[in-house]
Image (tube, rainbow, N blue to C red; front, side, top):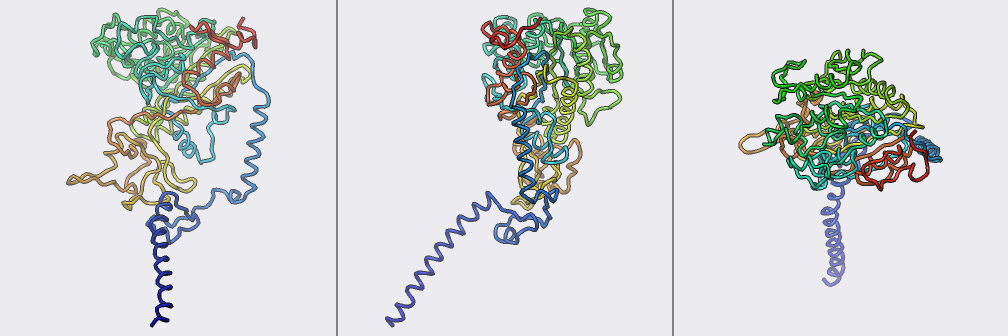
Length: 555
């Protein structure tokens, strides 16, 4: 018996230790595998189905091209990028920035760029501006909020000053709806367009939103509420339009607005009285009886032209000194919805703007602000396909302008005002349809999930089934996700998806573009642009390449 005990007890001890070890592995290994699953993209591993219930589909996940399977392919790409970086940065461009073009992709978050590349044809694709030599990140918060809107950000990236949510062209001393405070010039923040006009430069703005919307309004307006686009909106907030001048009036009669050579976008109703129907049949919004379009035409004479259609825009006489083009009652239609015979593209508007500004600059250069404004609107409605398409159209305008100008004397800056809550998630195969379902796994409810989804927004209700107090996700395989107005899934139900608080990218090329590298406050941008162009703002202590003795000033 003793000999049997001596033989059995060590075996029992070993079995107990083995059980404890296996128990630890069973407890802890799946957690790591859940977080970082290793997929066999040639053929799914059975263990991923049986042990960890990853529900991996049996899909052939080959590389898009055979060469990608070999090290020399990626080493060659890495060396080519290295050579390009060394060549581009070997000598800094410290010429005078005779011209400045600022491109603003409203709501163009970094995930929007990532998803957009796949929308263009693949993960390895690049937007034209992603080939610019200098890249940075800007911090977008308002003076009083963690997550920004397009009003406070416009004041930052155009005026150099952070301000409060919902206000434009005024300092953070002015609270929202402060009608009297908006008129106190002590609190006014002037934009880089104003600085350029003082130097005799031609100036213009182009947008796919209403020209009175928050971003373009940052070029010329000082207002305590971004919604005060016409006098009726001021009255709706119990304000006095005779005291709180609305944004459309400031565009036509304000110091900066009336001196703009180019005004292209949407927003006809904000300039017309409510007794007049605009081109699409919608009544004007103004209650004061003013027809600001006619007032603008009377102010600027026979060589200033008002246009409402693509054909009128593309056939302007070469003697045109100023143009106001309004191509929608409010915002211009999304590119995917537009009638191409009536509505110009952002690239076409940019081209006409450059024609006029180059002629009217008289050798003194120009400042042009171009906004792809409806990226933001698509995100707010969780219309991811439209957001990506608007980003692609935005890039076409940038590509055109870059081809038309000379990096030796034109500084081009591309950025966004804020991000959104859209994310790119999952482990899909390369080239998987970015506006479709993730093809790498099913969710725990054994249903597919979208590669693109939002943290909040109206896409919640559309993508769930509600019955007897229970909520269940819809099967996305049974939904037409390629429909341009399909609202992508959202986690939190909201009528309108919110902005995000992420930093946004900044891309720059041309004189002093190297100043835009690093991570910085968003309000740094106009300071760097004006430094390169030797512009003087209201800040008397402001430095420029000219005051530093690096360049001769404008003559």
